[in-house]
Length: 119
Image (cartoon, rainbow, N blue to C red):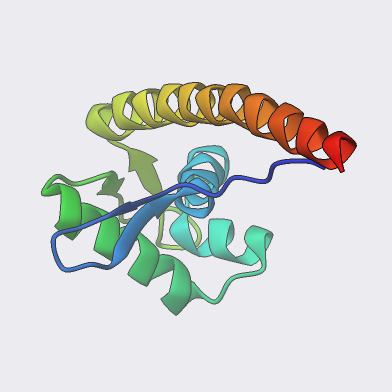
C-alpha cells in the first residue's frame, strides 16, 4: 500500500489555479525564457500554457512574467521576483504537506494491517 498525493490550490471561484503542473511550467519558462518554448518543451499547446499562467496571475493578483519584445524570435519572458518567491513558498508547502500526509498514511496503513491480522 502506498500513498499518492496531488495538491491543488483553488480560488474563490472553485477553480484550480496552482498545482505541480503550474510549478513545472514556471520552472520551464525560467529555463527557456519563453512561454512558447516552455509549452513546446512540456508538450502543451501554447494556449493551454497561456491559460494556466493567466489563471494563476488572475487568482493571485500579481504578474508572474515580465514579457520582453525583441531578439531573433521577437519573444521572451523572465519570471518576476514575486514569481520566484512564490515558487519557493509553493515548493516548501508541497514538501511539508506531502510529509504530513505520509506521516498520517503510515498510521492509517498500520491500523489497516492490524485490522486485517485480527480477522
